[in-house]
Length: 469
Image (cartoon, rainbow, N blue to C red):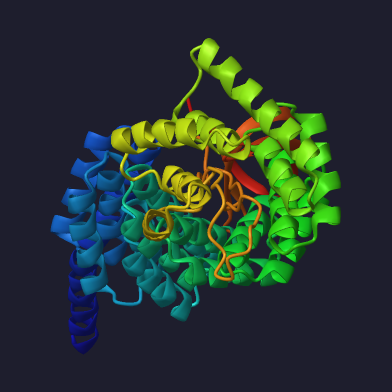
C-alpha cells in the first residue's frame, strides 16, 4: 500500500513539472518559428509569433528578436522599447547592446552608440575594437561633412567648431587642421591660421597650397625669410606653378633681393605673358635700380594688356587699377588719379585702388591725401582674407621710393569639390574628381582654388568611394 502511494506521488510531481515546462517549450517553439518567418522576410508573421511567445514566457532573447524585426522595418522607436525590455529581463544579454549601438550609430548619435559598445565589450563581446574604430571613423566623417556644409553656407564659425571636434576625435587628422587654417585665413585670423597649418605639417601634411598660404601669412608679418622658405617648399611640391612663383618673386623683391626676383618674374612672364600686374612689378624693380628705360617698357606692356582687356570687354576694376599704376609709372598721374577715383566710387572697399591712388598722390606731391589713402588701404586689407589681388606700392616710412608692393596671390580657399568623396580607413575624407580607376588604385584630381593636383590612392586604404551627381 505504501509503495502505491509513492507511485502516485511521483506521478503527480511529474505532471506538475510537465505543466510548468510546457509553456516554456511552447514559447521556444513560437520564438523559433518567428526566426524562420523573419529569415523569410515575413515580418508581420514574425512579430505575431514573437508577441505570442512573450505572452507565454517573456525572455530577453524574444524581446531582442522582436526589436530586430521593428528595426528591420524602420520602426526604430519601437525597436528601442523592445531592446530595453530585453535588458530588463537580462541585463547581461550581450546582443542587445550591440543592437543599440547600431541603431544609435545610424542616427549619428555616436556618444550613445559608443556607450553601448563599451557595455558590449565589458560583457565579453567580440571585435569591439574594430567596431569602435569604425564608429569613430563614421563620426569623424560626419563631423567633417557637416563642416563642409557650414563652410559652403559661409558659416565659418560653425564649420570651425565641427573641424575642432574632428581634431578632438582624431588628433592626427592633418586635413582638418588645413581646412580650419583656410577658414581662419578667410576670417583674417592669420596667427591662428599659421598655428593650424604648422600643426598640420607636423602631422604629415604635404600640401603645396598650405605652404603657399603659410608664406603669404609670413609676408603679411614682414617675416620675409620664413615666407621665402615656405614659397620654395610650395614650388618644390608643385614645380612650375606661376602663382607660387610670383609670390616668391614678390617676397624677394620686397626684401630688396632684386637680382633673385627678376629671373623668377621672367619665368612667370614666359609661362603667362599677360599674367596680372607682373609687368608693373618688374617695372617697380627697374625703377629702384635706376633703369628708367627698362621700367617704362614694362609699364607700357601692362598698359597694352589692360587696353586689350578693355577692348574685348573683359576688364574689371582690378584691370583699371593696374592700368592706373602703369599710367602713374609713365608720368600720366592725372589720368591715373581720375581712373582710380571712378574705381573707388564704385567700390569704396577696394583697398587695391586706395593703395594705387596713394602712390599717385605721393607722386603729385599731395602728402596728406597720400597718407590718408595708405591708411585706408591698410584698414580695408585687414578686413579681407588672403587676397588673390595685387596691391600697388605702399609708402615707406623712410620716404624712400619702393617698388610697387602688394600681398602675394593666394589660391581660393575652397577645400572641397562636389564630385567624388573618398573615405579612408584612417578617418580622412578627400573630395575631388576621379580621373582614373584600376583594380588597385584610384587617381583623384584635386582642386584647391585655382590649383589642380593629382593624388593616387591605394584601394586597400579606401573604405568607400561615394559618387556625387
